[in-house]
Image (tube, rainbow, N blue to C red; front, side, top):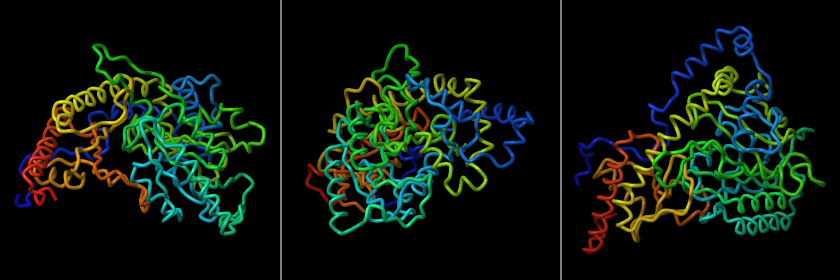
Length: 455
Protein backbone atom coordinates (compact mmCIF):
# COMPACT_ATOMS: atom_id res chain seq x y z
CA UNK A 1 0.00 0.00 0.00
CA UNK A 2 1.15 3.56 -0.58
CA UNK A 3 0.06 4.74 2.88
CA UNK A 4 -2.96 6.64 1.62
CA UNK A 5 -6.40 5.99 3.12
CA UNK A 6 -8.50 4.12 0.52
CA UNK A 7 -11.72 5.63 -0.72
CA UNK A 8 -13.92 3.26 1.24
CA UNK A 9 -16.12 5.02 3.80
CA UNK A 10 -14.80 4.87 7.34
CA UNK A 11 -16.31 2.27 9.65
CA UNK A 12 -15.44 3.16 13.23
CA UNK A 13 -15.67 0.13 15.52
CA UNK A 14 -13.53 1.86 18.15
CA UNK A 15 -15.84 4.70 19.25
CA UNK A 16 -17.89 3.79 22.33
CA UNK A 17 -20.72 6.29 21.83
CA UNK A 18 -24.44 5.77 21.28
CA UNK A 19 -25.65 6.19 17.72
CA UNK A 20 -27.41 9.59 17.41
CA UNK A 21 -30.61 7.86 16.27
CA UNK A 22 -30.86 6.28 19.72
CA UNK A 23 -30.79 9.55 21.68
CA UNK A 24 -34.10 10.41 23.42
CA UNK A 25 -34.20 13.94 22.02
CA UNK A 26 -37.98 14.22 22.01
CA UNK A 27 -38.30 12.93 25.57
CA UNK A 28 -35.58 15.25 26.89
CA UNK A 29 -37.20 18.20 25.11
CA UNK A 30 -40.51 17.41 26.82
CA UNK A 31 -38.82 16.94 30.19
CA UNK A 32 -36.99 20.25 29.83
CA UNK A 33 -40.19 22.07 28.93
CA UNK A 34 -42.05 20.52 31.86
CA UNK A 35 -39.35 21.46 34.36
CA UNK A 36 -38.76 25.01 33.14
CA UNK A 37 -42.46 25.83 32.82
CA UNK A 38 -43.13 25.02 36.46
CA UNK A 39 -41.80 27.78 38.73
CA UNK A 40 -41.78 25.46 41.74
CA UNK A 41 -39.23 23.37 39.85
CA UNK A 42 -37.39 25.87 37.65
CA UNK A 43 -36.58 28.49 40.28
CA UNK A 44 -34.82 26.10 42.69
CA UNK A 45 -33.20 24.39 39.71
CA UNK A 46 -31.60 27.64 38.55
CA UNK A 47 -30.24 28.43 42.02
CA UNK A 48 -27.64 26.63 44.13
CA UNK A 49 -28.68 23.17 45.24
CA UNK A 50 -28.13 20.82 48.17
CA UNK A 51 -24.80 19.04 48.57
CA UNK A 52 -26.20 15.50 48.02
CA UNK A 53 -28.15 16.65 44.96
CA UNK A 54 -31.72 17.30 43.89
CA UNK A 55 -33.94 15.50 46.39
CA UNK A 56 -36.72 14.44 43.98
CA UNK A 57 -34.15 12.80 41.70
CA UNK A 58 -32.52 11.01 44.62
CA UNK A 59 -35.93 9.67 45.61
CA UNK A 60 -36.77 8.63 42.06
CA UNK A 61 -33.42 6.87 41.56
CA UNK A 62 -33.80 5.01 44.85
CA UNK A 63 -37.23 3.65 43.83
CA UNK A 64 -36.03 2.83 40.32
CA UNK A 65 -32.93 0.95 41.49
CA UNK A 66 -34.90 -0.94 44.15
CA UNK A 67 -37.23 -2.22 41.44
CA UNK A 68 -34.62 -3.03 38.80
CA UNK A 69 -32.35 -4.92 41.22
CA UNK A 70 -35.34 -6.50 43.03
CA UNK A 71 -34.06 -5.45 46.43
CA UNK A 72 -35.85 -7.13 49.31
CA UNK A 73 -35.23 -4.05 51.43
CA UNK A 74 -35.69 -0.97 49.20
CA UNK A 75 -33.02 1.68 49.39
CA UNK A 76 -33.78 5.23 50.47
CA UNK A 77 -32.64 8.55 49.01
CA UNK A 78 -30.01 9.00 51.73
CA UNK A 79 -28.01 6.25 50.00
CA UNK A 80 -27.97 8.29 46.77
CA UNK A 81 -25.73 11.23 45.87
CA UNK A 82 -26.16 13.02 42.53
CA UNK A 83 -23.02 13.33 40.41
CA UNK A 84 -21.79 14.71 37.12
CA UNK A 85 -21.53 11.21 35.71
CA UNK A 86 -19.33 8.19 36.39
CA UNK A 87 -15.99 9.74 35.42
CA UNK A 88 -16.57 13.01 37.27
CA UNK A 89 -17.68 11.10 40.33
CA UNK A 90 -14.63 8.82 40.24
CA UNK A 91 -12.51 11.94 40.70
CA UNK A 92 -14.69 13.05 43.63
CA UNK A 93 -14.51 9.60 45.22
CA UNK A 94 -10.73 9.70 45.12
CA UNK A 95 -10.67 13.22 46.55
CA UNK A 96 -12.74 12.16 49.55
CA UNK A 97 -11.82 8.53 50.21
CA UNK A 98 -8.18 8.15 49.15
CA UNK A 99 -4.90 9.70 50.23
CA UNK A 100 -1.61 9.38 48.32
CA UNK A 101 0.23 8.54 51.53
CA UNK A 102 -2.23 6.21 53.25
CA UNK A 103 -3.81 4.55 50.19
CA UNK A 104 -1.21 2.10 48.93
CA UNK A 105 -2.38 1.11 45.46
CA UNK A 106 -5.15 1.30 42.90
CA UNK A 107 -6.14 -2.17 41.68
CA UNK A 108 -7.81 -2.32 38.27
CA UNK A 109 -9.29 -5.32 36.49
CA UNK A 110 -7.22 -5.89 33.35
CA UNK A 111 -8.13 -5.13 30.63
CA UNK A 112 -9.50 -1.86 31.94
CA UNK A 113 -11.43 1.15 30.70
CA UNK A 114 -8.38 3.10 29.60
CA UNK A 115 -9.72 6.59 30.35
CA UNK A 116 -9.86 5.97 34.09
CA UNK A 117 -6.07 5.80 34.40
CA UNK A 118 -5.55 9.60 34.02
CA UNK A 119 -8.15 10.19 36.76
CA UNK A 120 -6.08 8.10 39.16
CA UNK A 121 -2.92 9.88 38.01
CA UNK A 122 -4.54 13.25 38.72
CA UNK A 123 -5.00 12.12 42.31
CA UNK A 124 -1.28 11.41 42.80
CA UNK A 125 -1.31 7.66 42.14
CA UNK A 126 1.03 7.73 39.14
CA UNK A 127 3.16 4.59 39.25
CA UNK A 128 0.88 2.86 41.75
CA UNK A 129 -1.77 1.44 39.43
CA UNK A 130 -1.79 -2.35 39.54
CA UNK A 131 -3.54 -4.77 37.20
CA UNK A 132 -5.63 -7.73 38.31
CA UNK A 133 -6.30 -10.36 35.64
CA UNK A 134 -9.74 -11.71 34.89
CA UNK A 135 -10.87 -15.10 33.66
CA UNK A 136 -14.19 -16.53 32.53
CA UNK A 137 -15.68 -15.79 35.97
CA UNK A 138 -14.40 -12.22 36.17
CA UNK A 139 -11.79 -10.74 38.47
CA UNK A 140 -9.20 -13.19 39.80
CA UNK A 141 -9.84 -12.71 43.51
CA UNK A 142 -7.12 -15.13 44.59
CA UNK A 143 -4.56 -13.08 42.70
CA UNK A 144 -5.94 -9.86 44.21
CA UNK A 145 -5.88 -11.24 47.76
CA UNK A 146 -2.28 -12.38 47.38
CA UNK A 147 -1.13 -9.05 45.99
CA UNK A 148 -3.02 -7.06 48.63
CA UNK A 149 -1.36 -9.12 51.33
CA UNK A 150 2.06 -8.50 49.81
CA UNK A 151 1.38 -4.78 49.49
CA UNK A 152 0.35 -4.54 53.14
CA UNK A 153 3.42 -6.52 54.22
CA UNK A 154 5.69 -4.24 52.20
CA UNK A 155 4.08 -1.16 53.72
CA UNK A 156 4.64 -2.49 57.23
CA UNK A 157 8.26 -3.44 56.51
CA UNK A 158 9.20 0.09 55.46
CA UNK A 159 7.64 1.57 58.58
CA UNK A 160 4.58 3.31 57.11
CA UNK A 161 2.24 4.19 59.94
CA UNK A 162 -1.38 3.18 59.26
CA UNK A 163 -2.74 6.59 60.21
CA UNK A 164 -0.38 8.72 58.12
CA UNK A 165 -2.17 10.97 55.62
CA UNK A 166 -1.48 14.08 53.60
CA UNK A 167 -5.10 15.24 53.69
CA UNK A 168 -6.61 16.86 56.70
CA UNK A 169 -8.86 14.80 58.93
CA UNK A 170 -12.61 15.31 59.03
CA UNK A 171 -15.23 13.62 61.22
CA UNK A 172 -17.25 12.56 58.16
CA UNK A 173 -14.33 11.22 56.09
CA UNK A 174 -12.78 7.79 55.74
CA UNK A 175 -9.52 7.06 53.92
CA UNK A 176 -9.27 3.53 52.52
CA UNK A 177 -6.04 1.60 52.37
CA UNK A 178 -6.68 0.29 48.86
CA UNK A 179 -8.96 1.15 45.93
CA UNK A 180 -10.30 -1.51 43.52
CA UNK A 181 -11.91 -0.48 40.22
CA UNK A 182 -14.11 -2.78 38.11
CA UNK A 183 -16.99 -2.86 35.62
CA UNK A 184 -18.71 -6.07 36.80
CA UNK A 185 -21.54 -6.36 34.25
CA UNK A 186 -20.94 -6.29 30.47
CA UNK A 187 -17.52 -4.86 31.14
CA UNK A 188 -15.75 -2.26 29.07
CA UNK A 189 -13.68 -3.47 27.29
CA UNK A 190 -13.87 -7.25 27.77
CA UNK A 191 -17.70 -7.56 27.69
CA UNK A 192 -17.42 -10.13 30.50
CA UNK A 193 -19.83 -10.37 33.42
CA UNK A 194 -18.41 -11.12 36.86
CA UNK A 195 -20.03 -14.19 38.45
CA UNK A 196 -22.00 -14.03 41.69
CA UNK A 197 -19.34 -16.05 43.51
CA UNK A 198 -16.59 -13.65 42.44
CA UNK A 199 -18.66 -10.66 43.53
CA UNK A 200 -19.09 -12.21 46.96
CA UNK A 201 -15.39 -13.05 47.20
CA UNK A 202 -14.48 -9.52 46.11
CA UNK A 203 -16.50 -8.04 48.98
CA UNK A 204 -14.86 -10.41 51.44
CA UNK A 205 -11.33 -9.56 50.33
CA UNK A 206 -12.14 -5.83 50.36
CA UNK A 207 -13.24 -6.15 53.98
CA UNK A 208 -10.08 -8.08 54.86
CA UNK A 209 -7.79 -5.38 53.46
CA UNK A 210 -9.71 -2.12 54.05
CA UNK A 211 -10.36 -1.64 50.34
CA UNK A 212 -13.04 0.40 48.60
CA UNK A 213 -14.46 -1.34 45.53
CA UNK A 214 -15.62 1.24 42.97
CA UNK A 215 -17.85 -0.33 40.35
CA UNK A 216 -19.08 1.36 37.20
CA UNK A 217 -22.59 -0.11 36.93
CA UNK A 218 -23.45 1.78 33.77
CA UNK A 219 -24.42 -1.00 31.34
CA UNK A 220 -26.68 -3.10 33.57
CA UNK A 221 -29.96 -2.08 31.90
CA UNK A 222 -28.62 -2.73 28.39
CA UNK A 223 -29.21 -6.48 28.28
CA UNK A 224 -30.80 -9.13 26.06
CA UNK A 225 -30.73 -12.92 25.50
CA UNK A 226 -27.43 -14.24 24.17
CA UNK A 227 -29.26 -16.39 21.64
CA UNK A 228 -31.45 -14.52 19.18
CA UNK A 229 -35.08 -15.24 20.13
CA UNK A 230 -38.07 -15.17 17.81
CA UNK A 231 -39.84 -12.69 20.09
CA UNK A 232 -37.24 -10.76 22.12
CA UNK A 233 -38.39 -10.22 25.72
CA UNK A 234 -37.99 -7.07 27.76
CA UNK A 235 -35.44 -7.76 30.48
CA UNK A 236 -36.63 -5.41 33.21
CA UNK A 237 -34.58 -6.78 36.11
CA UNK A 238 -30.86 -7.18 36.67
CA UNK A 239 -29.29 -10.57 36.06
CA UNK A 240 -27.11 -10.34 39.18
CA UNK A 241 -26.91 -8.26 42.36
CA UNK A 242 -24.35 -5.49 42.28
CA UNK A 243 -21.23 -5.62 44.42
CA UNK A 244 -22.78 -2.91 46.61
CA UNK A 245 -25.90 -5.05 47.10
CA UNK A 246 -23.71 -7.91 48.31
CA UNK A 247 -21.76 -5.60 50.64
CA UNK A 248 -25.08 -4.43 52.06
CA UNK A 249 -26.27 -7.98 52.84
CA UNK A 250 -23.32 -10.35 53.21
CA UNK A 251 -22.61 -11.60 56.75
CA UNK A 252 -24.38 -8.77 58.54
CA UNK A 253 -23.74 -6.18 55.84
CA UNK A 254 -22.24 -2.77 56.37
CA UNK A 255 -23.68 -2.49 59.88
CA UNK A 256 -22.19 -5.78 61.11
CA UNK A 257 -20.37 -5.82 64.42
CA UNK A 258 -17.02 -4.09 64.13
CA UNK A 259 -17.84 -2.29 60.88
CA UNK A 260 -17.57 1.50 60.65
CA UNK A 261 -20.72 2.08 58.59
CA UNK A 262 -18.94 3.27 55.44
CA UNK A 263 -19.01 -0.09 53.70
CA UNK A 264 -16.49 -1.42 51.20
CA UNK A 265 -18.27 -0.72 47.93
CA UNK A 266 -19.79 2.16 45.99
CA UNK A 267 -21.90 1.90 42.86
CA UNK A 268 -21.14 4.48 40.18
CA UNK A 269 -24.22 5.05 38.02
CA UNK A 270 -24.82 7.24 34.99
CA UNK A 271 -27.52 8.34 32.55
CA UNK A 272 -24.91 8.47 29.76
CA UNK A 273 -25.59 4.98 28.41
CA UNK A 274 -29.35 4.83 29.07
CA UNK A 275 -30.29 8.41 28.15
CA UNK A 276 -27.57 10.64 26.67
CA UNK A 277 -23.92 11.29 27.60
CA UNK A 278 -24.42 15.03 27.14
CA UNK A 279 -26.66 15.15 30.19
CA UNK A 280 -23.48 14.80 32.30
CA UNK A 281 -25.61 13.47 35.13
CA UNK A 282 -25.34 10.37 37.26
CA UNK A 283 -25.45 9.10 40.80
CA UNK A 284 -23.46 7.24 43.40
CA UNK A 285 -24.95 4.74 45.80
CA UNK A 286 -23.32 3.86 49.09
CA UNK A 287 -24.16 3.63 52.75
CA UNK A 288 -25.78 6.73 54.23
CA UNK A 289 -22.54 7.58 55.99
CA UNK A 290 -20.58 7.10 52.77
CA UNK A 291 -22.84 9.23 50.57
CA UNK A 292 -22.87 12.03 53.13
CA UNK A 293 -19.07 12.07 53.06
CA UNK A 294 -19.12 12.11 49.27
CA UNK A 295 -21.52 15.07 49.30
CA UNK A 296 -18.94 16.99 51.35
CA UNK A 297 -16.37 16.89 48.55
CA UNK A 298 -15.21 20.47 48.21
CA UNK A 299 -16.53 20.93 44.68
CA UNK A 300 -20.00 19.76 45.75
CA UNK A 301 -20.13 21.60 49.06
CA UNK A 302 -19.41 24.81 47.13
CA UNK A 303 -22.78 25.43 45.55
CA UNK A 304 -24.23 21.94 45.70
CA UNK A 305 -24.02 18.75 43.66
CA UNK A 306 -23.26 18.98 39.93
CA UNK A 307 -25.89 18.78 37.19
CA UNK A 308 -28.49 20.45 39.39
CA UNK A 309 -30.73 21.77 36.63
CA UNK A 310 -30.28 18.65 34.52
CA UNK A 311 -31.44 16.66 37.54
CA UNK A 312 -34.91 18.15 37.16
CA UNK A 313 -35.10 16.88 33.58
CA UNK A 314 -33.96 13.40 34.59
CA UNK A 315 -36.49 13.36 37.43
CA UNK A 316 -39.25 13.93 34.89
CA UNK A 317 -37.98 11.11 32.68
CA UNK A 318 -37.90 8.71 35.61
CA UNK A 319 -41.16 9.60 37.31
CA UNK A 320 -43.20 9.63 34.09
CA UNK A 321 -41.80 6.26 32.99
CA UNK A 322 -40.34 7.79 29.83
CA UNK A 323 -36.82 6.61 30.64
CA UNK A 324 -37.94 3.02 31.16
CA UNK A 325 -39.97 3.19 27.98
CA UNK A 326 -36.89 4.40 26.08
CA UNK A 327 -34.71 1.66 27.56
CA UNK A 328 -37.11 -1.22 26.91
CA UNK A 329 -38.65 -0.19 23.58
CA UNK A 330 -35.69 1.53 21.92
CA UNK A 331 -32.32 0.74 23.49
CA UNK A 332 -32.66 -2.93 24.38
CA UNK A 333 -34.13 -4.04 21.02
CA UNK A 334 -31.85 -1.75 18.99
CA UNK A 335 -28.65 -2.81 20.71
CA UNK A 336 -29.76 -6.45 20.61
CA UNK A 337 -30.19 -6.28 16.83
CA UNK A 338 -26.77 -4.69 16.51
CA UNK A 339 -25.22 -7.33 18.74
CA UNK A 340 -26.81 -10.20 16.81
CA UNK A 341 -25.75 -8.66 13.50
CA UNK A 342 -22.15 -8.32 14.62
CA UNK A 343 -22.08 -11.79 16.19
CA UNK A 344 -23.43 -13.37 13.01
CA UNK A 345 -20.72 -11.59 11.03
CA UNK A 346 -18.05 -12.73 13.47
CA UNK A 347 -19.30 -16.31 13.24
CA UNK A 348 -19.25 -16.13 9.44
CA UNK A 349 -16.01 -14.26 8.85
CA UNK A 350 -13.75 -14.33 11.93
CA UNK A 351 -14.28 -17.62 13.77
CA UNK A 352 -13.13 -19.65 10.73
CA UNK A 353 -9.87 -17.68 10.87
CA UNK A 354 -9.20 -18.73 14.48
CA UNK A 355 -10.63 -15.76 16.37
CA UNK A 356 -12.02 -16.68 19.83
CA UNK A 357 -14.50 -14.91 22.13
CA UNK A 358 -14.87 -15.10 25.95
CA UNK A 359 -17.80 -16.41 28.00
CA UNK A 360 -19.56 -18.19 25.16
CA UNK A 361 -22.02 -19.94 27.49
CA UNK A 362 -23.82 -16.87 28.86
CA UNK A 363 -27.61 -16.70 28.74
CA UNK A 364 -27.75 -12.89 28.90
CA UNK A 365 -25.38 -10.43 27.24
CA UNK A 366 -25.33 -6.68 26.87
CA UNK A 367 -23.40 -3.43 26.93
CA UNK A 368 -21.66 -1.79 23.98
CA UNK A 369 -18.71 -4.04 23.15
CA UNK A 370 -17.36 -7.37 21.97
CA UNK A 371 -13.89 -8.62 22.84
CA UNK A 372 -11.97 -11.33 21.04
CA UNK A 373 -8.53 -12.85 20.64
CA UNK A 374 -6.71 -12.95 17.32
CA UNK A 375 -5.16 -16.15 15.99
CA UNK A 376 -1.49 -16.53 16.75
CA UNK A 377 0.90 -15.01 15.92
CA UNK A 378 -1.02 -11.90 14.86
CA UNK A 379 -0.75 -8.81 17.07
CA UNK A 380 -3.59 -6.37 17.53
CA UNK A 381 -1.45 -3.30 16.85
CA UNK A 382 -0.43 -4.70 13.46
CA UNK A 383 -3.96 -5.77 12.58
CA UNK A 384 -5.33 -2.39 13.63
CA UNK A 385 -2.86 -0.51 11.50
CA UNK A 386 -3.49 -2.65 8.43
CA UNK A 387 -7.26 -2.37 8.98
CA UNK A 388 -7.00 1.42 8.91
CA UNK A 389 -4.67 1.55 5.93
CA UNK A 390 -6.21 -1.16 3.77
CA UNK A 391 -9.91 -1.21 4.71
CA UNK A 392 -10.55 2.10 6.54
CA UNK A 393 -11.82 0.28 9.64
CA UNK A 394 -10.95 1.38 13.17
CA UNK A 395 -10.79 -1.12 16.04
CA UNK A 396 -9.62 -1.03 19.64
CA UNK A 397 -6.25 -2.74 19.94
CA UNK A 398 -5.79 -4.64 23.20
CA UNK A 399 -2.81 -2.64 24.41
CA UNK A 400 -5.00 0.45 24.61
CA UNK A 401 -6.78 -1.17 27.58
CA UNK A 402 -3.69 -1.98 29.62
CA UNK A 403 -3.38 -0.60 33.14
CA UNK A 404 -1.09 2.40 32.67
CA UNK A 405 2.43 1.90 33.99
CA UNK A 406 1.95 -1.68 35.20
CA UNK A 407 4.11 -4.29 33.50
CA UNK A 408 1.81 -6.94 34.89
CA UNK A 409 -0.93 -5.77 32.54
CA UNK A 410 -0.02 -8.17 29.76
CA UNK A 411 -1.55 -10.79 27.49
CA UNK A 412 -3.47 -8.04 25.69
CA UNK A 413 -1.33 -7.81 22.57
CA UNK A 414 -3.57 -10.27 20.66
CA UNK A 415 -6.89 -8.88 21.98
CA UNK A 416 -9.33 -6.63 20.11
CA UNK A 417 -12.37 -4.63 21.21
CA UNK A 418 -15.11 -3.72 18.73
CA UNK A 419 -18.13 -1.55 19.46
CA UNK A 420 -21.62 -2.10 18.03
CA UNK A 421 -23.31 0.99 19.51
CA UNK A 422 -21.94 3.79 17.32
CA UNK A 423 -21.97 2.88 13.63
CA UNK A 424 -25.15 2.51 11.61
CA UNK A 425 -26.56 -0.97 12.02
CA UNK A 426 -26.04 -1.96 8.39
CA UNK A 427 -22.31 -1.10 8.61
CA UNK A 428 -21.50 -3.52 11.41
CA UNK A 429 -21.42 -6.65 9.27
CA UNK A 430 -19.41 -4.85 6.60
CA UNK A 431 -16.91 -3.66 9.23
CA UNK A 432 -16.37 -7.21 10.46
CA UNK A 433 -16.05 -8.50 6.89
CA UNK A 434 -13.40 -5.88 6.13
CA UNK A 435 -11.51 -6.80 9.29
CA UNK A 436 -11.65 -10.46 8.30
CA UNK A 437 -10.13 -9.64 4.92
CA UNK A 438 -7.23 -7.95 6.67
CA UNK A 439 -6.66 -10.88 9.02
CA UNK A 440 -6.90 -13.38 6.18
CA UNK A 441 -4.37 -11.46 4.08
CA UNK A 442 -1.97 -11.26 7.02
CA UNK A 443 -2.27 -14.99 7.72
CA UNK A 444 -1.64 -15.74 4.04
CA UNK A 445 1.46 -13.55 4.06
CA UNK A 446 2.71 -15.46 7.11
CA UNK A 447 2.11 -18.80 5.44
CA UNK A 448 4.18 -17.52 2.51
CA UNK A 449 6.97 -16.57 4.94
CA UNK A 450 6.56 -12.84 4.31
CA UNK A 451 6.79 -11.47 7.89
CA UNK A 452 7.80 -8.02 6.73
CA UNK A 453 4.35 -7.30 5.30
CA UNK A 454 2.47 -7.81 8.59
CA UNK A 455 4.55 -5.44 10.66
